[in-house]
Amino acid sequence: MQKDVSYARKACLIGNFNIDLIIRNVPNLPVWGQEVAGNNYMQVSAGQAAYTGFALHSLGVPVSVIGYVGDDLYGRQIRDDLIKSGIEISGLEMVKSACTAITVAIVRPDGERAFVSDFSFQRKADESIIQRHWQEVKQAKYVGILGIFCLPGFNLASIASKMDALQSQGKITVLDTGWDSTGWPPEHIDGINTLLKHTTIFMPNLDEAQALTGYKLPEDCAAELRKRGAELVIVKLGKDGSYAHIDKQTYCQEALPANVYDAVGAGDVFNAGFLYAFENGWEIPHCLIFGNAASAIYISRSENRFPNQEEVYDYAKRYYELPPLNTQDC
Image (tube, rainbow, N blue to C red):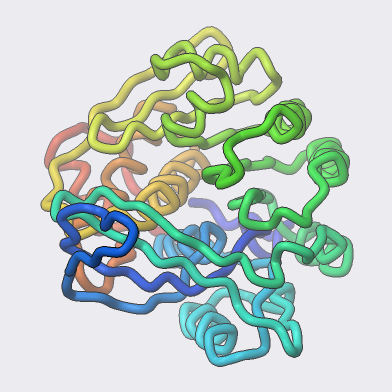
C-alpha cells in the first residue's frame, strides 16, 4: 500500500475489550446441574476491537483503539498486549475500581463456539469516550465501530450522529455489531438501521444478518441491509466463505481449506484481511479471498495466530490469482 501521510494511523477501532477464557474440545454444552469436560484452555486479550486491532497491525496497518478496561489484572494484561503489538492505546481508558469484562468461550472439536459474557462496568460506560479521544478518530482514514452490543451503555443515535460527521469528513466508517445477547429487540434493530444510514462497510456474520432482516439466505440479507443504507455489505458465512453486495453487484467467495483449531475471533480477522485488501485498491472478489485466507490461517494456528501480509498472500495464491502485493507500510 502507498503510505498516506495525511493520516497518522490508517484505522481507529472503537469498541469492546475483554478477556477471553477459551476452553476447547468441549463435545456438548452441559445441562443445568451437570458438567462436561474440555481441554487445552487459554486466557487471551480479546473483544472485537482487540482481535481486529491485533490482526490489522500484524498485516502492517497502523491502528489506534478507543474503549474501556478496568484498572485490574485483566485490564493491565489487555493494555500490555496491545502495547507489545504496537497498537496506539491513548484512547484506552482504565477505570479505577472496575472489573474488566470477561467472556468464557466454549469451543467444540470442530471449532464452532458459544459464549458466556459478563460485560461488567461496560454496561454503564457510555459513548462520551469517543469525544474525549476525537483526535485519534480524526487521525484515521477508517473508523470502526465494533462489538456495540457488548457496550449497552452506548447510545446508538449518538453513535449514528458521530458516524454521519465522520462520513462528511470523507472517512470510511466500518460497522460490526456482534451478536445481541438481549435477543434483538425492535428498538435495537431500529438503532442499527439508523447506524446503517451512515455506514460505509457493514460486516455482520450470517446469524447477525438474519436476526436483523428476518431473511435466511445471505443474498436476501445483504440486499435488505443495502436498502437500509450501508454502502457495502459483507456477510461472513463461516465454513461457506463470504458474500458481498455493493451497488448492483454481488459476489460470493468460498472459504479456503483450514484445519480448525478454534474459530474464536475468526470473523474479526476476516474483517482485518478484507480491509487490508480494500485499502490496497483490490476488487471486491480479491478482498473476499484475502479476508478468507487471513481467517483460515488464524483458525488453524494454536500460537502466533495473527498472520502477516506475506503469509496471507502466499496462502491465498495457492488457490487464486491475485494482484501484486505491495508490502510497503500502510
